Image (cartoon, rainbow, N blue to C red):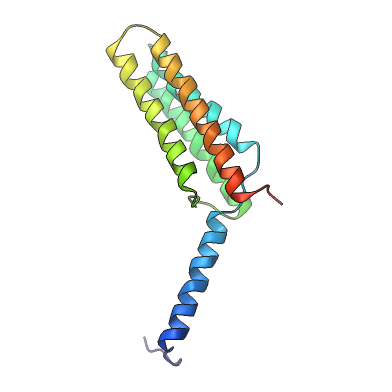
Length: 144
């Protein structure tokens, strides 16, 4: 394909790329609805608690995982920002900590017969995601 437009000079190209970066940042930092933070936190905690179930553990785990994905995708599409990851490093770190707690719950369920470590990791996953929600809200403000 042939371009019939003029070739931008370096300053115009830099300005165009800066505009694109600003637009991407604006989309990534769009405020989320308040209700999504506790819902995600409870679902992550519930996901960790699925490791206490003896029968159909995988099915239950996958059901919760698909619920998390579905809730977040639906909300993202309604907001006009599906599949975006916020720019807040604090948010990303807290979400990673919540995910690590879910994995730790899995390991605890495999390594011990006791339920309390799994429950503790589930509570930690919930708390870590709630912290992530506070960090995200502070970095983006309230939804309009």
